[in-house]
Length: 158
Picture 1 (tube, helix red, strand yellow):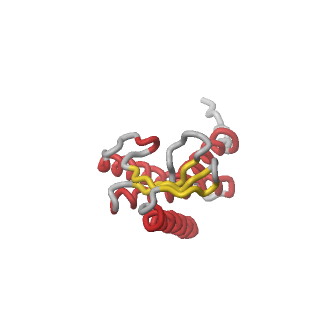
Picture 2 (cartoon, helix red, strand yellow):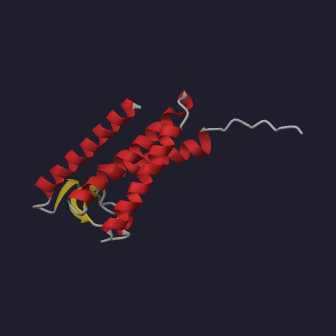
Picture 3 (tube, one colour):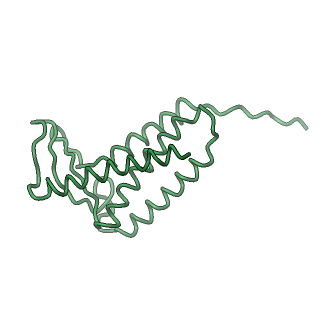
């Protein structure tokens, strides 16, 4: 359990450092080409969630994020401590770290700092915390759908 907490804190720290760098280096200039035709670093103040949904609804987003974090912690604690669920725990830690990283931005800045922009197709600008959430959710989906099998329950005979 403590390892998961330490990993989550380190992941949130990495997210916050990258956002601080974006604030200091990118905000004054707006955008810098990283790989021509592939990726730019573009400073964006995201006041919504994915794809700008609920823009300007800070308290609703914070409430929703708080509920998601509480549910994820509940499931993390309730998971069996078997080897089969190690990857599930890791995926949950990723989602939690991403949610908390973006929550910190909303609380202290009023917006989330986004700065990665793919330029070879139209996709919203994102940040390190968003990467954690996406990778964690994809991993959880794969594990739930294809890997983890529930033990068949024995039927009670009357």
